[in-house]
Image 1 (cartoon, helix red, strand yellow):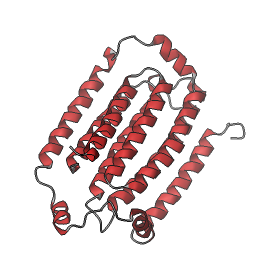
Image 2 (cartoon, chains in turn blue, red):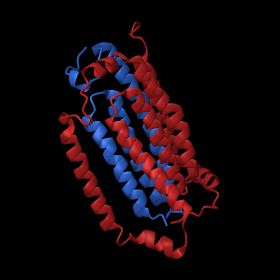
Image 3 (cartoon, chains in turn blue, green):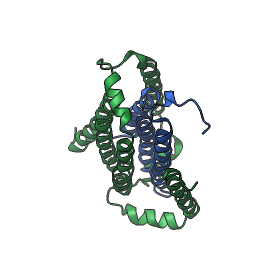
Image 4 (cartoon, chains in turn orange, green):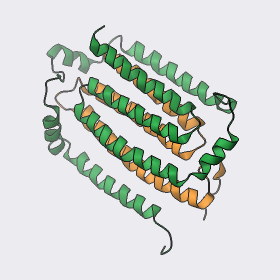
Length: 101
Length: 182
């Protein structure tokens, strides 16, 4: 029998993998992938809890909203990364230490 | 140990294993294709929580949209990859990352401890739902109900997210164009 705790543990593992990617990677695209993994872990929690909420379907609806938000975040994030790459010729966040043009 | 449990564990192992490989591999292109595997496995896990529409949406939006965008951005900024390969160490986990490893494992153990303690007694609304039998069943018509909910109870968040998505996409298109007209 698959209980709620199974889902929670899997999502905790995925979240920590995403956190490691955000903390350790030196490549802006991989940092974005780490953020996506963390969002996916949150969506898994939403969906797992939603099984017990038949009257409102709150978890599934807000999981869909979270997927849309993640897609928008990736679109804007990649546009910024490409601009930064054109400007600095690198996507390592350590080498980007000025904000002005 | 039913067949359902075995498939659940297989999907969970696939997601976690591909995720661990993703953060340890040096080649960004391979890491992106491993991200694809993670997303498919997560979609399988959503099916086990009886959210079929979310699983399909995950495959359509993430695999069809987000991953293609990531691969495009990776290919358009390819110089970094070559530099990364030249300066990479041959060790499996480089020593500079040990702080992140410690932080992640600490956070993971904290979360696991909390979840295991928490699941000793479920919150009231879950107990109520189990005792009344108002769970989502496998034979329910989820998509029809989701459509009704979107257009009635959650119509305001739905409209807000549509406006937000339009703004984000226009902003992304504006940011990424060539800056000659300014």
